[in-house]
Image (tube, rainbow, N blue to C red; front, side, top):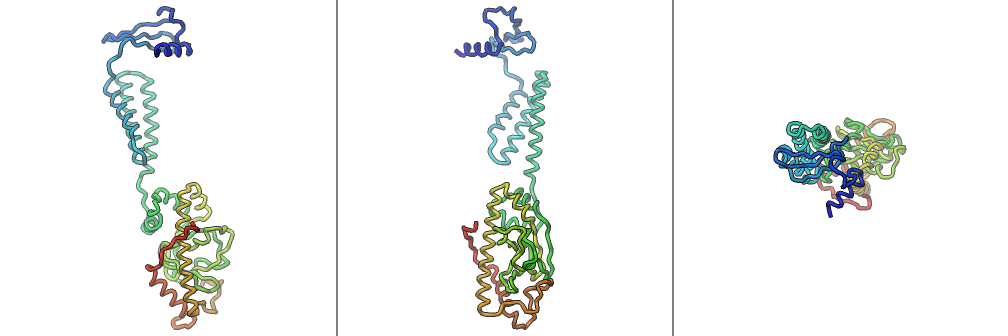
Length: 341
């Protein structure tokens, strides 16, 4: 039955014309190797006919066997990045062996050509893969941010490097330097405190303190456009360093990867919760003391927003608040509101 199907297929392709024709009419020759294996082969141009093997040839050379063995190893490569490395290396070794088999043993040009093409293709893929698997290292303060915020959420170093590519700059703030002014500064960035502490106020009233590994403008991430102005003032209460991202560029970048978008929404939502809890503590303190900034403060001048003269009654409440929050940093409750994520 299989021979009939083979004959019908050959006739459909025009390769076999009529079984009644003789070998002379079809220009077919019989080849016999040194072991007595005989094959029928066409002498026509193009040599597209099917060879009818009357007996099996001996096994091919060792190069051919080893090459196919490495192809088998490539097929059983596991998933993951290192599995792809295994696959590419196995394919490269297999292609090299088949190229040697075609060049040295069979002396067949088409085998050498195709094996060389496959070899070059896999070499290119291997180089790209090695570049991606290359260890990604960050500066010490960036490494701290990655380890504390992003690595626990299984963000790879390669993904975090993509996030850092949207960075605008790392800004250093001096003691008492103003970072943002209420109703003056535009919300066109996302800022993360690398080191130091900053105080946030509104209408000369303290709201909360931002510590290292916290965001300065996480509430504005949700639903606030870059054309809006900041509703709070932010001042450094010690020397600080701020990592600043291009807000729109960052949003477009993480939009391409839903996983990164979910991670950012989670981290920023958690940051907002911490700020809300600090504001609650502030309100409790304000109920017992005067937490307003001194009356001579001018919003247009770059003055410290939360610094009071020693012994001043106006600054007693806010000074106590700052000291309390600095001392209770390690005791801040850890809470996540799912509706914000």
